[in-house]
Image (cartoon, rainbow, N blue to C red; front, top):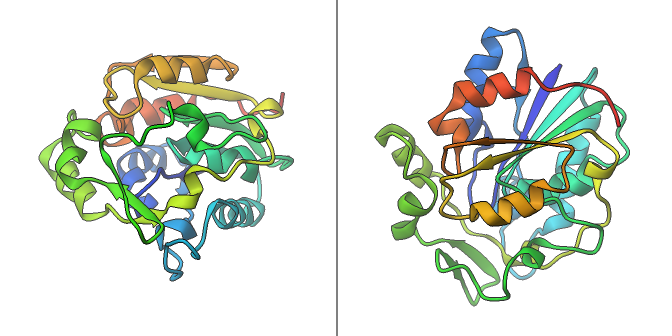
Length: 235
């Protein structure tokens, strides 16, 4: 089994965000990887109104998945769930989807479909077609249960992202054809638990832990154990 981690919005370096859970997986003989998302500026293209958007992220993740041999589990975090919904569709090597405080869009839905139409107070939308997390809000919103080292590393990896990803609809719903689990993080101050539980109703299985938005940083062993225990078969 190989685990692919798809990171959330407005950050870079998915392998860093995943590294604590990855270490426990490696001890169990399981490899993992984290493909870069173009809309976050990770592939050299500049985010913005004319920059890379959701289709580019979908294409990057799908190409990565198609390059792997053997069974794959995808761990999709936050915005990563929107990317994964389309990127993993129709790929027989993907055996399970784990959505972490994430979104499971129907075809035609976008990230914006899960809000009330108003920008979240912790996000800053610029006139250049990008958006990002307001640094002064990041810790209390997303990292309040993380240690100081993780908080510092997370702040170093905040980036501006093409804002078009928030409104671009997906064209597929991989979670309808692939076995899925949703991890609800009950202390998440960014994606309210009530929103998470509504999304979790679309998944095949639900697990809830007392963690914030990034449990793979604050409680990596529990996340790794959950991944190792996932069934690896198609619906």
